[in-house]
Each structure stands twice: as C-alpha cells, then as structure tokens.
Image (cartoon, rainbow, N blue to C red):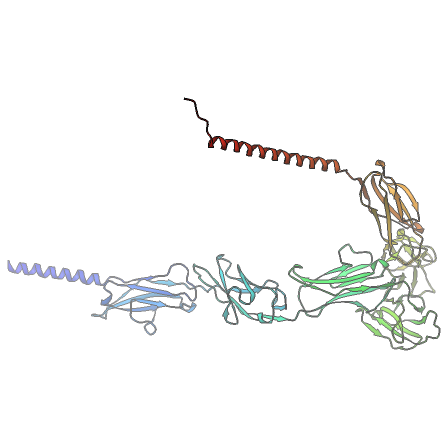
Amino acid sequence: MWSRGLRRLHCLRLLCFLMFYEGGRSQPILSLKQEGDIFEGDSVTFDCQAGDPDAWQYLWLRDGTNLHESWDNSSTQMIKRVTLADRGSYRCYIKRKADPIEELYSNTIELQVSERPAAEITSVRGWSDVFKNERLVLQCTGDKKYNDWSYRWYKNGEELQEGHGNGTAKGNTWSIDLINESHGGTYVCRGERSRRPTYTQRSKPFNVTVRDRPMLFLTMRPAWQTVYYGEMVTLSCQMIAHIPGLQYQWYKDGDRLQAPYPIGHRVESHIYSISSVARSDQGEYKCQAYSGRPSVQLYASDPLMLKLTEHPEVSLEWTPMWTVLFAGEDVTFSCRVEGDSQMKTFRWFVAAANNSKQTLSCENTPSCPVTFSDKNQSGLYWCETELGERRSKAVDFTVTADMVALQTPPLPLTEGDNVTFGCRTQNPTKYTAKVFHEDQEMLPSGGYFPVEKEHEGRYKCAVFSDQTLLNSSEELHIPVRDFFSSVTLSVFPGLFVSEGQTVNLTCEALKNSFLDLPVNYSFLHEGVLISAGTDAVYSLSNVKMNSFGTYSCIASSEHGIAKESAVLKIRLARDWSPIIRYAIGSVLLLCLIGVMTLIHIRTTEASDASLVVNPRRTPA
C-alpha cells in the first residue's frame, strides 16, 4: 500500500517535470515592430520573445552569420539608422542560462530596405546664372509616387525661413523677387511627409550665381548714319551674355512687327534684314529678347533710328555694268562727288556675308580695280571720302558659279521704278541670251519702263544656239511692292454726325518711293465715284439723310498705280436730348412722389401720437 503511493508520487513528479521542461523548450518568436516599407535612415527594432526572459540568453543571426560581435545578448535589438547593407534574413536563438548546451531557434524575418527617395532641385527658367533685379524661382521635386510632400530649403548649409532674404516658399518652390548679390550661393532642398517615406534625401547642391544684368544691343550693319533708297540694311539684336533659349521680337515706331512681313523684309531670330529699303521703312526700330514667356525674363534694346535719303552726294560707278558676275571677272570702280571735280581721294570698302566692314587694298585712289575670283568676294561695295563724312550708295555684287546669269536691280522692285533686266553667258560671242517672264520672252532690251504690279512673277535667263535651248538660270521670283505704302481715309469731326453738319474727308497717301509722281485722289460713296482730282480733301456740306453710308478713297498716279483705303461708315448721330429730358423728368417725378409720401407718413405718425397722449373720455 505504501509502496504503491510512493510510485504514484514519483510518477506525478515526473509528469510535472516533463510538462515544465517541454514548456520551456517552446520555439522563440521573432517580430519586427515597424510596419510598412522601410527606407534608408529609418529605425528598426527586432523583438525576440521566449517565455521567461530572465531564463534565457539571446543570440542573433543575419543570413546565417552570428551577430554577437555587434549585438548584445538582450531580447530586443534596434538599428537606429538602417542602411541598404542591413538587408537580409534575421533570426534569434536562445540558450537556457542553466543549460547553455541546448539551443532554440526562432522564425525568420526578411528585412527589406528601400533606397530613400532623393529630392531634385531645379530652376524654373532652366539655368543657374541670374541677373540683378530678376526673379529667381527654384523648384524642389520629391518622389512623384507620393503627392503629399512638404519641403524645406537650405542655403549654404543653413535652413531658410519664410521671408529670409525676401524669399517666399509656395508649394514646392522658393522664389526671390529682385535678386541681388546676397542671394548667390548653394541651395539644397528636402521633402517631408507624415508617412513613410517620411523624408527624402537632400537634393544635390544647386549653385546660384548673380551677375550684372546684360545689355541688349541693336546695331545696323554696316554701321551707317544715313541709308540711301534701295540699299540693303541688316539690323542685328545682340546680347553680350550667353543666355540659352532666347527668342526675339521686333518693333517699329512702337508697333510690333509680325508675319507676314512687308515685301523684301526677312526675320531670322536676332537678325532683321531689308533687301532694298523704301521710304516706308524709315522710323525707330527696337528689339526685345525674352526666354520662355515675355513676362518671365525680358530685355529691351535702345532704339535705333533708320533715316533714309534719296540720293548720295557721292556717286559710285563701275565697268562693266554688271552686278552678277562670273568667277574671275574684273570690275573697275570709280567714285566722284557731285559738284566737286577736284575730289580725287577716296577710300574703298566691302561688307561681305557677315556684313562686317572691310577696307579694300586700293585706298585713297579715285578708282579701284577688283577681281572677283570666287563667291567669297560677294557683298556690298561702296566708297567714302577721305575723312569718311560722305559715302556712295552701297551696291550688292554677287559671284555665281552658273553658266548663265540673270541681272536684276535691287529687289524688291517698286511700282514706278525704271529698271532694266539683263541676261548673259560666259561665252557671249557664241550664244544668244534672252530674259523670260512667266515663260514669255521679254522685249529685246530685257527691260520694263516703268515697273507695274503685273510685272511681278517668275524670271529666268535662257541661252540659245540658233533656236536650240542650251542652258538657263534658276528661276527667280521678283516681287513688286506698292508705290503707295498706305492710303488712309479720315473723317472730321467723326463718324457720327447730325443732319446739316459739314464733314471733311481727308485722303492721306504715303509713298514707298522717292519718285515725284503726281497723285490724284478719288472719293467713293457706297462704291460710287463722287469726286476725283488732285485735292486730298473732300467736303460734305449740309449733310442729308442720303449722305450717310460707306466711304473710301483711292490714291492713284501714272502707269496704273493705285491703292484704296479702308472703308469707313458715316452714321446719323442720334439726338439724345428728348431721352435725357424724359429721364430727368422721370427722376424728378419719382423724387417728388417720395417726398410727398414721406410727408404723409410723418403726418400720420404725429396724429397717432397725439391720440395716445390725449385719449378721449367715454361719457358715463
């Protein structure tokens, strides 16, 4: 009996021991306290749980390698600033302090570390060099997968606050108006948000250099003080500093010049060229340069006045009388001053393709022989008096490699000009050369006298042997501009008139040419001629109802030259006085009604008040 009880007690003790021992051998559980994506620089905490924490010794593994040299034996391990090198498979294992031989291993946790997003700083205008008094706008961009970034800005290592150095933070930009030297330096930005990734890497440094504002220069090449009718003029808009992406605008007399440009005018970025200047080209020219939009960054040149004179005092002559030359041909230039036969000393110049003025070798001589050896000698040729106070008209000479040359005057032509066309070949004695206009042979002389609008079109020079076509030049389109640059009709006292008034119509005609041709003026009412003559003013006396309607005028001259003004409409001016009188009367009547109503209300209120103060007694 007693021995049986001892056996039962022994079994109970053994069962309790086994239960305790097996419970102590349960596998430790490894957990990572952080949730979501982990980025470089975040803190990471591993927690290893194993029953009674005081009974165990904790050890750590990454990718199977023991971390005992860098990690202690506690159950919790923290990496304060995780890096990409910390990525891997982590486990913990435990040993009982009383029995360190036995080891128990936890589950595995894969630590994924993502590269922290980088911020990028850029200039809205695309460059880091800015000029005094301009506006600087820097833009910071974080990872575009997230749209809830806020930004911090730093300059030379110090954080920028709102208003610092007149800076303003708005959204992802830092802007400074009227920048000066103190705003130069190294700028950095960083993005922040409330969720992971909570911040970006700092951007790469962005260096801002503040320079003196550059000047925009408008020059004329060659740099002449006075230009003569028919000469070639080139205006150049030049910026001293290099600014990428500049665009240019051109102005004449305050008005912007836009396509389509006048005949003979061409715009190529910062170059404005006129192949043959006319009277209407006189005026004040300016250019503007801008980047992006004009409101972003704008530079304006000083004005340049283009003055035009009909004929110079110095005459340039040359033999043979060709301006389109074959390679190797010789031309002899001579110069003379009108009314001064004693002037024999001249200086000779050429402006080649780049329009830079160069001196010819035959300086201080009355004549100058030139051999046009190749096309590089094409350009403008002229002469000047010894001191340079007077010059001749510059003439454009071209060296062609073609076998056939078409000789034309400076283009475009102007109505009324007296011109001559020429056609020649390198072997003039063997062949016959002819000029064709719109595939029709011109007169034997190859010229028109004078030019009319119908002479505009395609021209070419053809060479024949007997009746056989041997060769021809390239077709050249020759434009003809109007003799009148503009015709304007003005009305005084205005377009709204009353019956019985007198109205003056004035027709103003401006010319492209210096030709002194007579001008006639025609006035039209509803398209019907009502007056014609040399008087530029037409008066409508005692205007009647049938006088109202559309009017225009036509300026005309010899040889079919004519140009019409825009149409203006003269209308009857409505007599507003009855309406005004009615309106004034209505207002006065309303005021009177209002006053009477107010008096009635006040009288009624006073009567009611007296009844309250002195109530009547009712008889008994």
